[in-house]
Amino acid sequence: MSQQPQAETDGGPMLRVRDLKTHFPVRRGLFGRTVGYVRAVDGVSFTLRAGKTLGLVGESGCGKTTTGRTILRLIPATAGEVRFEGRDVFALPAAEMRHLREDMQIIFQDPYGSLNPRMTVGGIVGEPLRVHKRARGRDLADRVAELLRRVGLGPDCRNRYPHEFSGGQRQRIGVARALALDPKFIICDEPVSALDVSIQAQILNLLERLQSELGLAYLFIAHDLAVVSHISDDVAVMYLGRIVEHAPSEGLYENPLHPYTKCLMSAIPRSHPDDPRERIAPQGEVPSVTNPPSGCPFHPRCPWAMERCPEEVPALRPMPDEPNHWVACHLYE
Image (cartoon, rainbow, N blue to C red; front, side, top):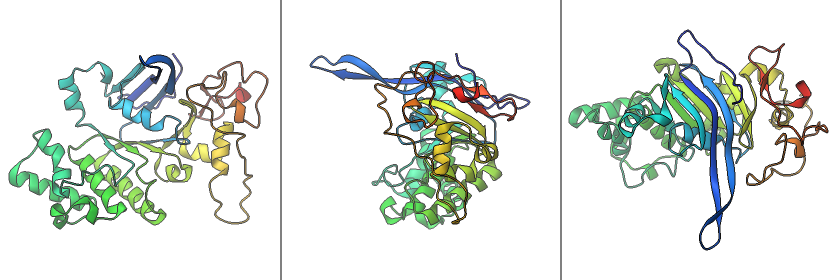
């Protein structure tokens, strides 16, 4: 089992993910014979403290969303362990998992596709309260109105339908739905990637305010490092199903170590012409997840690949001179 960055508090971390793997079988032929596996998540480990945000960042297809959904048991895990407040999420029976879902919620990426077009906003936001028997009648209506106000929407929105709202307003509705059961932990699955830049900042500020007011913990999934830096306490960089670097947000941005992280950092648009950053482009294309490279998964695209990189998988190791900074790269061994 791989080592993992520790983010301990006096009572331990709220969420502990250990050596998580999610592999999907590839089937071919008339009888659906399994000919291989898509290793979407391949040994991910991290911890998250209450009230904090971990940013999970990487290119599309690296396994970020699958990681989030596996944690919530929306997708079955192949191996590994997820513990939430000490409880083994994968071992819980259905009745206990139903109760645990009140504490663990998700905000989906697509504000257009994640809301039922046939339901009113009041029905969408109130559905978790009805399903979990938290409120009904006047109490339900009052709670829905309170949730809409909390995310910046008026209670008069309750009788309208999702198509009547802009993308940013729909995402606010999704946030209100996620808050309905008073969760402790929310997975934000690229919640601003489908929005205009000006609206992105509003949603990020909303999430930060809600975290401050309610003590929420976030796993914030994104492909844009600039967005992640705005909201995250720590950042984990993912590539082909593995975490290749994990560090406090400020430390990662000031001193990225892994070659892949350096490539991502150099792609952030420059704020002024005199920005000294050098553009570092990875070589070639992202490899197939059904046939990943041997050794370090990034070595075919790495500008600094060494002879040992195709042969040995680098372990995620702590850097002696960088507090809480972990990197999986042979350059630092």
